[in-house]
Length: 217
Length: 112
Image (cartoon, rainbow over all chains, first blue to last red; front, top):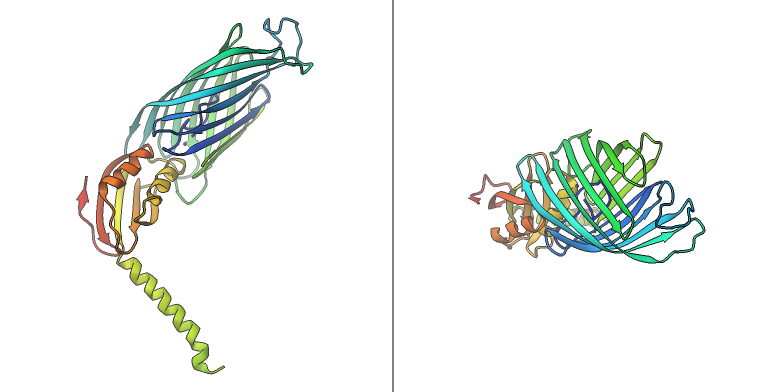
């Protein structure tokens, strides 16, 4: 099931050769928008924008402001390292790296300039027609700021797979976001998918509403 | 309007439908067994690439069986190697290809 070189946890990071996957995620501590054209059946290259809202401004801003934002503007390479296709399952190993700029925008809205940034990531997943399990880790690194986001997911389809009908899934995610949130966040999500569309909505144990939407052109 | 005049559109419609059925009945069918095709989000890429082939009339996907049935345009044939490449470019593996066979005919030969 999705996407782009992206955020902590959705479906496949890349679709078929010649496709373009557009994905957006919105939640209080993190938002992202990615576009991933598949230039081969296993490689995608495209832009990714991530907005992060740290719990408190860190030393990078140097002024102790709160309510600031980090904007990570990256060109991402998404690589499917290997896929195992079975009659009843699909399993994947993914990796990628992004390079670009981090812009710190404190609460007063005035940018404090850009700094070089890079973002390696990796993901493994296994999926049948009724069951999903996956894990991913991703680092956002700039000169003096590092954000490590790690997640694990499991999902169960609520109906059998049918090409002509929407299929609802119940997903459960455990995630840590160093520098953005404390502790482990658990989020149950309702996922629905139908051909080109994959959408998710959930509320985490910390009360954060999360919305994800992926569309394949 | 006479009875025969009223009947004319209906006759034309029946003939057109019959013609379409006969045309499809003569269209070769191919059945591909696909590994890894576990959800519609995966399968739509396979459908898109197979529909892009010039000889394809229609594509039908059965997720529970992991099969894709392609109806070729009347008079057209599809190269199994081309079908296999389309599926592989979508990210999946072909377990086997059956066909071509005429629509409504028995089991076609198998090409692996």
